[in-house]
Length: 304
Image 1 (tube, rainbow, N blue to C red):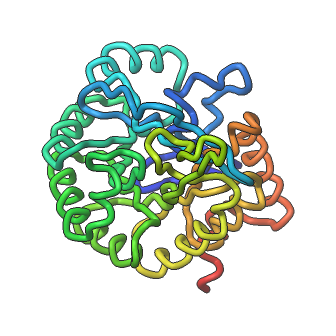
Image 2 (tube, rainbow, N blue to C red; image 1 turned 180 degrees about the vertical axis):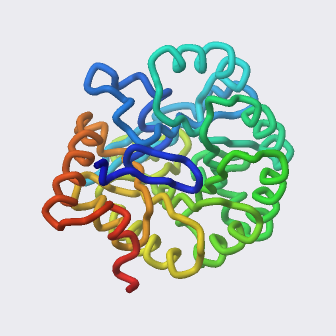
């Protein structure tokens, strides 16, 4: 019996392990290390309606126990995704595919959702209203409760696919926003996106990143992410996709105990490409040692 089998907001998965958008490319880049089909789902790189070149200048900076990025949602746009990327994925990928969807305006979010909704192979949508390193849209949608509710409601109206809303930790009360997007049609909450940060080159006397600010991720953010998952779990009745600094099986278990029904692995894959496989094996071992019927038995156990 598969003790990791999970249904996450209507998506049947062989296990609760996903990859965080932006860290796993379009799903096949890590095929030399392991079969990506072992994953419960792959959350694809951020997609926009039109192609984006991303931010100029230095876009990555390493920090102690983490990294800063200001990629700026570089991607080839929907038409290339539909006509090229999807066909390549369908040749080799059989596990669930989730699209991370972005827009500059609410109208763009809605139009792109309508197009994604017509692709049967896409299992779900991760609505990214929290990217901290794009000047148009991005975090501005998720930081304003009224706009976060509005974009969720309007996207909900044009798709029947499972809708996962990805929220920013760079707000005063994320639990309030999580409840609002739940009330406006979200099927799940993804937390956390990256923290807003910066680095300075003291020789050049300038910011390291061309965009000045970037998204901070990696093991250093884990305590913050874990706290937010714990808080949001108490505020909503829909499942949580937890992420933020997960670099081991123990980390994944902690997120699930705090309230995450599934977890995404991100920055730590860069330093350990086999991390997803190790965590899946680790969760199986944990289930046997703890005599669990299913890994879901520990979801939110801290609240009981």
